[in-house]
Image (cartoon, rainbow, N blue to C red):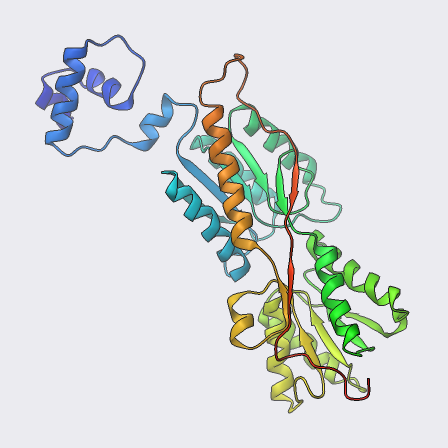
Length: 345
């Protein structure tokens, strides 16, 4: 080891000094090692420091689909906050698999991460849910702090939006424009967020006495799913008054299919989505704006603050200081060019 040779000390001594280990080493020797390290422009390994610290300066972010721009906005919020605090973000794709979440969480424990953000939705009646809860609890006992950005019973704090209310409010907007026959393109089956948005849509349609005019169609959360579902919808006449998509990506796919079919939007059919991703503004999509960046930022802030407070536990405990609490952030309707009042309303 160059630093050890330059300082004239044993490798083990230099390693202890550079890693910050609490070991009886004289001030003179420490000064020699640090001076040698400075001359050699040596930067001690973050993982080496983590071995003698409660945690590393690492925040993991587990996303359901790394291609989905929804998660890009969240990840940017996490990373900006983490960077300002001197932390590093590690992004991991889990493909909507609970077993993968468990394995990634274990990897974060191995890296002594300060915390992990669960950015994706859980599954309805997930047989792996108890195993994930156990894994989260064990990680917390070892000092890792978890935050969920979806409604999930993980035993950790959460920062969420009310997806039922999101779908309810955008449906209300369509109803207020005189639309009665509304087709809803659902999200991936079995996902909690898909169920909640479907429930919000059906709830507002029932309140308006339009249950018989509410039509749900299988879909997904990407452009291709929206395009395929819309082709099926327009193949069965009469056309609906409006199409509501489970998210903006699906809505853009719907717009593509409608325009390819020569159907005017919004004169013949209004189209709306949810999330307010960047693409929504580009295509003039009516949607619901969600505070995705703020969700990621708040999650990272919680992890960093909690990790700092738990850095030197006073009670001799495990450092598991998370107390389950839910923060619900507000959403906002954004009306744009893809919706208009029905002509005969």
